[in-house]
Image (cartoon, rainbow, N blue to C red; front, side, top):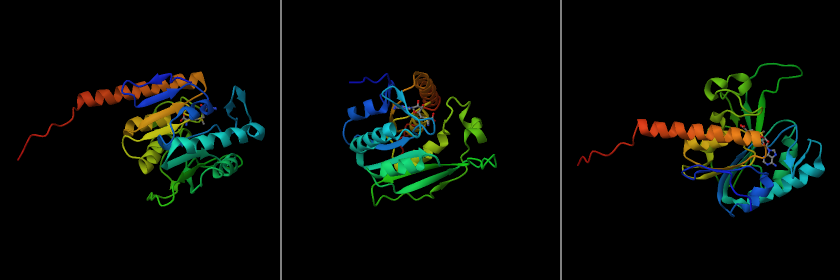
Length: 245
Ligand SMILES: C[S@@+](CC[C@H](N)C(=O)[O-])C[C@H]1O[C@@H](n2cnc3c(N)ncnc32)[C@H](O)[C@@H]1O
């Protein structure tokens, strides 16, 4: 049994410094409302202490088959699942995810970065699953949210992870598919961006990160965000109704 290494004082943020595949089987069946996660891209992922490379399908295919089977088990039927990919990993994730759940859309986040050598990487894809019949009134092209190479520092502060996502992007996905008090899971949390989005939008959060340095960075960001929220509550206490007839 892997114990959570960090739990916020109000219990709404629970973090595991561990491999996602070791934590997922511990989650209660049908306990998660949404998954927003950003698996490692080109440089491979860690599995039982082994660092895989993109072409290592003998590690990556069994890893992600077990992963999506566990995601399906841990999520409620009305789940929403968002998986970040790019042009290098999109085909791989599309195939493995589809074995366990229908990929209902591929969102495109436009980073508007201009030009570069051999074409600038100016977009990321986000594979999306939800149960059939669910309505989300939005376009599958997300525009106007800056990446860290394009100005996100102004709204997010310094970049603390090489593939850090802007909080505004994660908040949009959370708002599209969950309501206040629901539980969001990020199994590859990196610097904890999904957790920050959840705190800002009043969602509960469960996260895993295998790297000790990024885990500590995530804890520091989360504690700073919780402190900011606490200060805002003290500065503006909830309004008490005046009892007008
Ligand atoms: C693409 S990054 C996520 C960055 C994140 N979106 C952010 O904004 O900071 C993926 C993270 O997954 C972590 N990781 C890799 N393999 C893992 C595993 N098996 N279990 C949990 N975390 C893992 C890596 O250390 C890395 O920090």
